[in-house]
Length: 187
Length: 294
Image 1 (cartoon, each protein chain N blue to C red):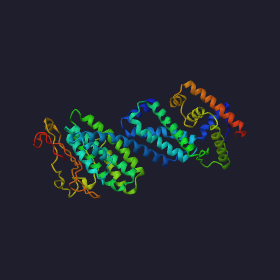
Image 2 (spheres, rainbow over the protein chains, first blue to last red):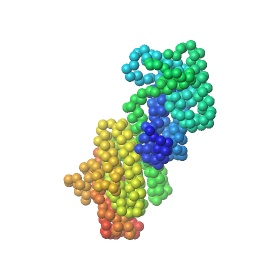
Image 3 (cartoon, one colour):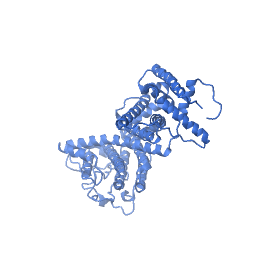
Image 4 (cartoon, rainbow over the protein chains, first blue to last red):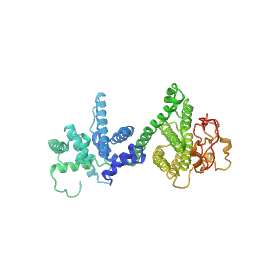
């Protein structure tokens, strides 16, 4: 497990052109970034491509980056959020209705009924997330899909910690109300 | 879901559901491809500014009008009309380099440029030029090793060796990334280049062990260094520092036969490594200020 100082050092070395350090940053942040993008766009292939593109964008601009490890993480997810918003704007310009697709989960030898339940759950929650505010959705996905801490989420969103806590609390409550209001009982 | 559900507040339970939902399995092959793309992009951005700076400096020496040619040549690959301009500018950079430390730095720049060319050729699908570039890259790495070893005993030796080690580690990462996505025909050359870069990490602290393609290895049977002398002979360091330069290690000086057209014995490309002078050996005399091209 890398410490905060380790990550800061990786960022410093990557800014100076150390490819091994940049590769280590990729290994460190890519899984969470992918999960976040998967949660936002709902399509595995698209999420993988977008995650790769985020790192390409970051690689191209890293020499101008002036922050530490926490700042790098925040920058990474900020780029991802903007890419998601750009994608949605482009989709709406093309007059294509974005479909809340069910994230494709790899299930290892689970019984069929568990898989069905899981997919139904995924459909419900994905649809529910689309019905809460954008800020609340961002907080929930950064916290629980990408696995960021409260402080890391605050860094990404550029908000005070107290505001993020409040958004998380209100977001979960709003999501729960939406899901219960749909009339589909949780398994 | 199976197993007993722990007692949780409703919001905590919902948060756990969201977490489980997106704890998705990542396709390791696609992650590897993504990683390669990112490293290649990283390498491309790193290498271009340095080359451009060197090219602009060289153009300022030659003429103002050459700036346009410099910019146009920046992205050239073997076979492009401006590739010879690019190689010529590298010769100028080598000419401008004063002293062994600057020579080592100039050869590192050239090695990085070659690596950037491999990255771009791969990205553009111009696979046929990659073997040629890789041979030039390996030659440049050999020159880096030679010069770094030459300055090993000087005060700046550790700094030069440190820079070389750092940059060559990055090269190795990029070459590993390229191997992930390269077509089969390019793999052997990429592996040789990667091995050369890897072997050069400890340059200055371990015996030379450069993996060179046979045609570029002066130790290979049948190799005739005299046949591959650059037009003006190897450039020797001038000035007081030359007498203290350590004995030259063996370095690749030949121009290997190239698979593509347009490359022949006259095409030195600024990449024929010049060897450092032996201790006590006086530099070859020449008119003051005249520094022969490689």
